[in-house]
Structures are given as C-alpha cells and as structure tokens.
Length: 468
Image (tube, rainbow, N blue to C red; front, side, top):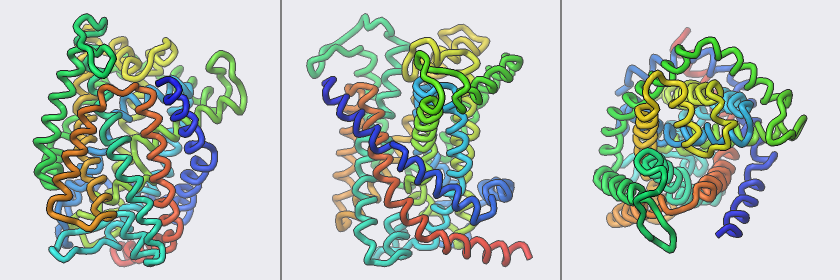
C-alpha cells in the first residue's frame, strides 16, 4: 500500500507542477486584464445579482439556486481540511497564494458562468444542457469535440474518485472518529484493517442520506442546497469571527507570518529557504485553493447553465461570487484561525489541525469546539457529495447517449463510491483528488483562453446596453 501511495504522490507532483500552476494563473491574469479587473469593479453588482433572481430566461432553477448548487459542491472539506493541509505542508504563506489564486480565479469563474449560458442548449425532451463540453463543442467548433470528451471523461473520475466522494466522506468519518473514538477503543476488522465503529456507522449514515437526496435529481439537490448552504456558511463564518474577535491582538502577527512564509522570508520544513519555500507555499496554496473554489476546473458552469436567465454576463457575475465566498471569505477565515492558534506547526494532519485551532481559539470547552468543527465539516462535505453527483452525472451523460436507466445506474455507482471512501488512506485520497482536478482543468482552461475574446465582447456589450 505504501508503494501505491508513493506512486500516486509522484503523479500528483507531476500534474501539479509548475506548468499547470502557471497556466491556471496566467488564464486568470489574462482575463483580469482583458476585463479590466471586472471582479473588483463589479463585485457589488455581483452581490446584487446573487440576491435578486432573473426569471426572464429559460432554465431549470433560479440563479440563486444554481449558485447554491455550485457552492454545495465547492464549500466542502477543502475549506476545512484542505486549508489545514495546505498551511501545514506549505507553511502559513500557502494562505496568501490561495487568495492570489482566488482573486484571479474570480475572473476565470466569471468567464465559465458566462460561456455556460451563452452556449447552452436543449435536448429533444426540452432539458437544459450546458457546461464546458457545450462551450467547447459549440463555441470552439465540432472539430474540438474530442477535447470536450476528454473533459467529460476526467469529470466523471473527479466525481467518483476525487472531490465528490472519497475526500468528502473520508473527511466526515475522520472527524467523527476523532470526536467519538479518538483512541480507537471500539473497533471492527474490515478489509484486513481495524476501523473505529464510529467510522463505519458514520459512513453508513452518510451513504443512506446521500441515496435519499440523489434519487430526486437536480431539483432535489438544489432544494436542499438553497436551505443548507447559506445556513452552514453563516454558522461557520460566525464561529471563525468569534475566534478572530477574541484574539484580535494576534491577527497582525498572523498576517505577518503569512506574508513572511509566502515570500520565503520565514524558513519551514526544517530549514528550507528561498525559492524552495516560495514554490512549495505557492504550489500547495494554489492547488488547495483551486480544489476548494474549483475556478478553472469547469464544474461550476455545469450548474450555472441550468439558471433561469437570458443574460450570460449576469450569470457570470453570480458565478464569480462562488469563488469570493468560498475562498476569500471561508478559506481565509479558516486559515487565520489556524495560524493564530499555531496548529499548523504541531505535527498534526488533516482535520486534526482545524479541530486543534478551534479548540484553542473558541471560548468554549474543547469538547464543544471539536463538535462544532465536526458538525460543520460533515454538513460541508455532505453537500459537496450531492453537488458533485450532479456534475459527474452530466459528464457521463455527455460521453454516453442518455438513457432513462443511465442516471439511476450511475447514481448507485456514485453512492457505492461514497460507501467505500472511509476505508482509504487520507494522503492517497487527497493526492488522487488533486490528480483528477488538474487533468480536468486542462481542456476547460484551453477553451476559456480560446473563447476569451467572446467573453470580452459579451461583457462590453452587456454593460453598454445596461449602464449607458
């Protein structure tokens, strides 16, 4: 098993090497320049559009429901475990690079949302079809359909073996075990290994809940997301604010540590210095940031394409708010709490880092703080499981001619992946997720760059019509 983990890690290091990081950042920077920092100039308009639906166009769900569906898939373990992993392996500076990736990623997410609406289509039954496969095929031309197929292929595996299942359920069951049975006193033997009974029970419960919601399809998922996603984000950010307000004098030192680590001024990992520190910090921060907010992956436009609106630009602005909420608000809060507590330097891993940070920072008994983190992680991860089922289901429908039994069959395969997720090693799970994330991003980024002129012309035309 260790040999397999080592191979997976090597592949992850290759996929998330300098080339992919440069491509993703370059795309965001290019769009930011061509759109004249639209993500900053039109941030207020994005908030307004997010809260006021546009029902003038055809679609399956409201713009807000589409955003909540996208957020249900993005606000997950990446915000709690992913940030902790990035900061512990890349230093506090990884948080800075997450923010940089998010700032430019907002422009990328804007382009994704815009293109999703512009190039969406309907099937013979009147169902809305949209996402990167359709703006690749309809925007770049049918000769590029092979690229759309590649995107869809990797999208299926991101859902089944990456963001959608393994990382989420693994994060949930690990948090449950750490809370209810940290010393592994109640165990059961499965697959040749010992597991806490709490892991088995939590895994079964989440699997059953997943099955109950997924059977209803997109409208069932969006209905749950509209209620759960805003509530869970407000509750989690509220807990973070309590920590920050009660440790307000520690914030300047934490910010200084983040910047020192980000630019190689503070050695990490036993004395690594200079460019090695900067690269490690940037690599982990950008990779985990993209894992969290999914800017450039091409997942969010699948949900955005279902929105009831006729204006591509409007949905683009709503879509970019997902990155703002996910990374610039939620991930920043998590990172600051961890750095203030110094939990990233205690040799802990995964969710244990975040639990330690909240236990140290919240003015509650440590047991209560640990429960809060566990509950938030469980809800965050559960909604991500739901959202990514919809994404990967759309991907497989693009690859294989839709059939009335295809969706049902795939959902049960997806549910089975959720069921086995708790029994995989944490490091292997995250590395597998990173690999498929990177591979999925490449065809989508290619399309966005190729269609960036359309994004710019659509943007200029919309604001000329609405603001003159």
